Length: 419
Image (cartoon, rainbow, N blue to C red):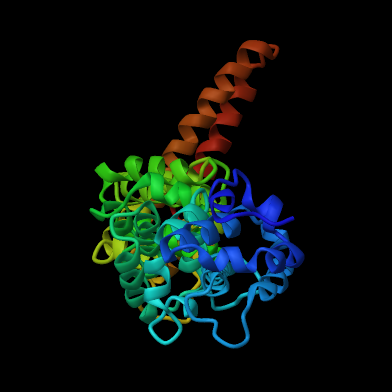
């Protein structure tokens, strides 16, 4: 079916009518009669209406409009350029294209082509700005990002597409330089940090997979106490609350809090006795201890030395478990362990000195005559008293017998004294 120039310009859905080779060949003469501006508009409408999945087949149909002798300023030349614009933009989203940024670099980039079909390019980009910006941020090497953004900004100045590419490149740059650097806290304090951009380009954070512990440890070490809650809230803003990064950062912040409150406090044993104490966390965030404990190891050990032996033994065991650098003499845990041993360890039982008796105490001294005399007198008195008691119980004897007994006792006593 053929159309006049006016009919061609008035087509409501030109792709439905001219979207095949036969229709283009039949209307080639009338299509070439259109002015250049009219050709550009109709060609743009045709290509824009072509579904992406039919774009490859439409490329073959376009050849039917070609004039072999002279193709300059023909409808075919405009249609082919419009096709190239859409094809290049769509190719930026093709996952098989490993280097989509190369199309926008100086050697591959045809600025005049995109300038001539600027409206078509903007229409093709519509609703694809974020996806293409994300793809460019993921694949463009750091050294090429500036040129890629400059070319995009030149062709699409102050456009939504240019703005999205700028935001995506900024997020990727800050992830690499700051979040994965020595000062990840600066990622969140940067003036260019935008929570909306982080949410929009959340997949850019896939590069930190398996690096969450390192980032969390550095954040806990460098983030001031008054900013830690804000950092956690920002992370939860663009990551899920149960994401690996959010969990690790909260754990690292909690460990630093316990170090400052307990281990560096008046009762450092509370750090080890706390229900929150975890050997695994201490080893995972070992980066915190050398810097936070520097210069305090001796004081901590001396405080622990005042505890009883059983408590100290348990703490020593835990110190050994969390000491991931046991071979290093400068390890803070080794210094603490050495300082917590009391200077004078008291014995369990103090031995009682054994005093041997002297020879004089073992061998009795020879008594003097005076001592013997006194002892005999005492013996006599005791004997007399004993006899007196017995006399009261025994039957009364005769006077002669009593006299004879007295005489015998006196004689015996005098004989003992005279020896």
